[in-house]
Image (tube, rainbow, N blue to C red):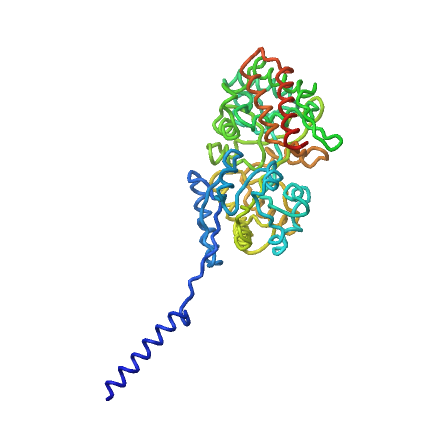
Length: 464
């Protein structure tokens, strides 16, 4: 009898367990994790950076166990972006350039993150000029990683070999573009290396040329009565392009083939001593040092030389933007990850730790620890950042002070040309390529063609 009762109780228990299992009562629920695809994950070649990101990932996933961080290395390019976006394969968060947000917003490829920023309180900490670049109709679509301002990179070893060093050890750097040509000639004669690296392979060539031409008085785009007009063949642009022609054919101070030089090879020539001078900004000092092996004490950044009509620094930057497919939860996860990285405009235990880890990694890899360009205005954050920079400083700031002091002067900083910027750069690069490969190139005729081409784009896309 007892055996029958035990069997009945056992059957009841089994049935109960079966019913409970069907209802899911008393068992852990399988919750689908939020997937955060990090487009700014470093390339495999940057071993130390990858290790740092792995630590941040581990720390983040321990703090936010409902989120899975997926490395998704992506380097923005106008050629690859649209196919990825149309296929819905963009990372949750990725980096681009300050020239791109308005275009990406208009195309509908990036997410409005205004609500998420307000939840974090970060919307009020953004530098207003930077916020304007990342906004449309009062809505915000990105946040700044950092901003930059172009200066002139100097390979100090080549300056020393050419006898271009002051008694106090600082370089005798050029104050005008004419001086740059003459100093570049001295360097070529005394070291056999190029004096200046000019870019003429891709859009970066046109980008750098606008910086040079502004100093000759150029203004490439003019708005009148609501329409935009190309101004690529003005006397000022012609003068600047003739200066480039002289660097190639009169002074002969450029690298062997400027049409093979792009943003990356420019840092390679400085890092390896293939050239002595190159236009670059403070946010890329890891390129000649960490990537191409130049010791941090062999590098200086000085002001861009003055031209006959001015002395400007092209200002741009790198924003973080978000896939239009990203959910609000995924955007919030990305913002929380930025705090772990020390890239958020707040002072928290996590952000301080992230900033210190970044500075330690720079010191470990021989990257100059120098001030960034202020993309945020939160005073507490800026003070914390400065304190950490001072703690980990690894360079002699005399090699950088003239550059930073120059940037503080009124009117020096100049944002990139506002409309179809990459298309403008592409047209200018075509002219550069012709000028550095043909000593008989007709500069005015080439710029007339570029002006016509660019005006057609403005009329077809902007003025329609």
